[in-house]
Image 1: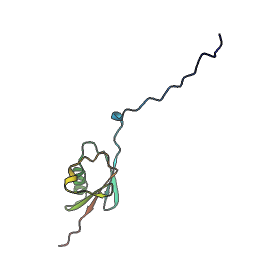
Image 2 (image 1 turned 135 degrees about the vertical axis):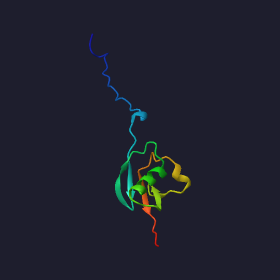
Image 3 (image 1 turned 120 degrees about the horizontal axis):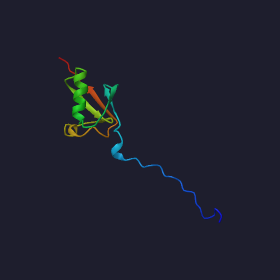
Image 4 (image 1 turned 90 degrees about the horizontal axis):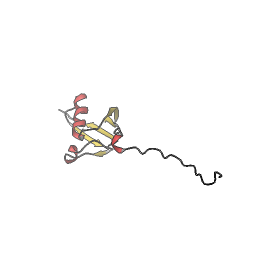
Length: 94
């Protein structure tokens, strides 16, 4: 009996489960300058923005996520899935 009836098989690479992937870090920006990265797991947009503002002494600021201004309604949404969050200091003159 010859080897004509035997076929070689390739092993397929194991599929990765989406549940085991670690979430991508979100780039944090302050007035256009990178200040670090954050793990977005469990954070809302407003929580992350408040942390950035507090660490940098800001009391009044605007928020951009992926370059788009965030409204008050959108601030409670999860940060997960974003590429960047940017906090802009609002100008205050006394």
